[in-house]
Image (tube, rainbow, N blue to C red; front, side, top):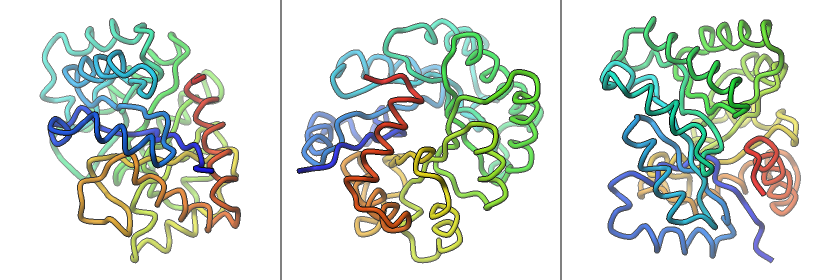
Length: 261
């Protein structure tokens, strides 16, 4: 029996899927990936993700938000758009949001402002947050700790986690889930595998982050939701469980976090 998996982070709005999106969804279903979260990065993609989730309601759910690298270029009404879409019935989370020191597209203070906005909006609407963190672990933990100290556990996920063990432990202590993508399978990612092996089963999620970061053995191809099986298999081996067990736990976790049926 094919394990049932949930790809918790896919950019299916990307133009690279325009030519064959229905076939991509068919392949995902055939691979056991029955549910996919389409993740927004701008106001425009927030609208598009909601449209896709509305068009494919049996398989897709949407997030809305503005990714830190896109904050500086956002239109004046972009945040208002996100706030309006946050109550749409197909929306299950806010984001992706967070902090990024790898790129310099957005001044860091502006990133912090929008991260705080997402966290506040999530609290008000009782939605989880999808958090992007690249070379900004200390700053991300600092802001999450401030939110945690004021309001209690943070309902959300550190997407495509690549952080250190200490960061993983701090995030878990604040109530967050950790999601792993294709980098987990890469030859030079032993440190990340060591971290993933120690995450409790009840706090794990899997994702593709497609069309980026295709896992081994399909690295170099356009990534797509069906390929999350490869990451899940790697994660199952690290956790010393079989794939159906890993799938059962990650699917339950995703349903719990995002309120999926």
